[in-house]
Length: 320
Length: 287
Image (cartoon, rainbow over all chains, first blue to last red; front, side, top):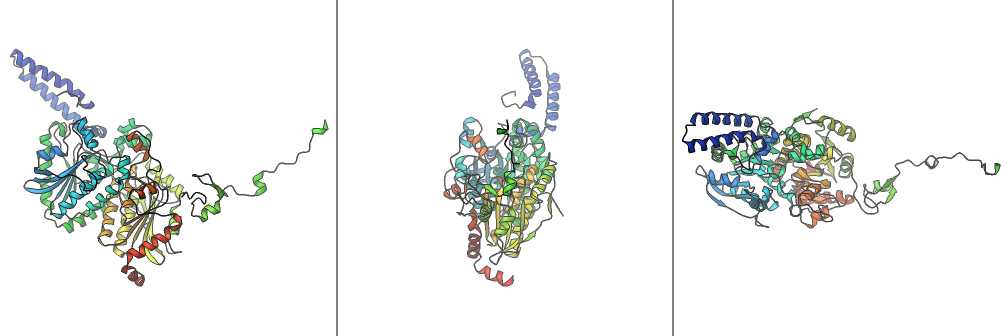
């Protein structure tokens, strides 16, 4: 399993994995019974992995959330949804591959799924702009959200972006307006909506797909007003202070649950979603089905009212 | 050697002699024009020479957009907390409060403009860069909800560097909270005008600032989503001249009009009369 995708804090696992591989090879070649040694080593590996993953620092979680192999929107679309038909373009300028969306079926129900899409490799990442959308990506998303409401289908969004792209063309075409419009329209969208942070929830670019009746986060995903690097650069003029910034920003799923920003944390397989994509998919599927079942009983007008109340209650202040 | 022993008059300092206070003269940061302070003040802190719009305080905007004596502040008692126990946040709040004499980054209230009742919110860049934390978000949301209840228009004068980092994701959620309140105004067709002043960026531009039915901006104001330093770092090249100015946004179809400060009052009033339509009459009758 040791490869280029191993994270720094996973290095202690490497040695054990190497020993297990070696032992397996010896066992096969020499026809010696190594089962009991193998079991011991495997148990040791499992307990070490548990220890590491149960004690991740916020910045380590950021690393897991950004993992190159972490399942992305299209992975979930092919693993837990069926009948997916991708819909492209904002009808105004171009199709932005940093956001994907379309009709899909979940447990028999037609739903609209929209998500940020990071690349699987360098080439794909260049096409997908590392999951950083331009305004036309958000406008495509808006078009699909409206279509969901029009046909009384629930909306499911999957969030995984470092942020909306900060570039000249993005500004020229109104990045701020695109985000602002999605946020206000999602607040009043007349259909059921569930937003799930599957990886990185980067600021306004995440929120522009993230205003929903239910907001869920995978255990090792993060959601923040600014990246730890950006925060460190502003506060301490030093991007290497990102550990400290990640700690201060309270950006992990359990932090957001405590702050009453999200409704539920979706547990991940040990070792992170990338370690067992099928397990992660199954966890997501069952949670989505449960929430959809609850939300489908509520009329859209009531959903909008409750949504406004929910967001209206967010924040911490004193009143003299 | 007496020929050079000139009798010296005691030297009187020029300042004392002329009795001109130190702050009589003002210099324009853009063109270098120097003029007496009074002329800057008369021109609403716009340079009489080059038209550069210098910063205007929240109180000054309130005065500019209100009929005399009609402003009534609302929710002045809201105070920020430190929900994340973020390094040095309480100290920064206190120093900003001392500097500005204000409890947080926005003043909200009800006022009258040319006889029309409206709800007005004015952000204050001097308070932690006009950043939006829970207090700013709450005050705007309450103001918008009150506008909806009372069926009176909402005008927000914006200036902000974005969401307030020290309240983390709670600040981010203020974008959703203010938007949800403004969505109610939309549903009721209540006019909402935003006036963008220098600078309006980040989470504020990506929420209520860009949600106005009509979006006005002052000349030269920097408006955009991403900060210029971040963009430069990302693309690794210099930015074009005039990038992200009000004029740039007007040209790219992002805002309705660039309005000099001297015309803001009249333009806002005229727009409200148009947008209020029939409702204006009943507003006057009931007020």
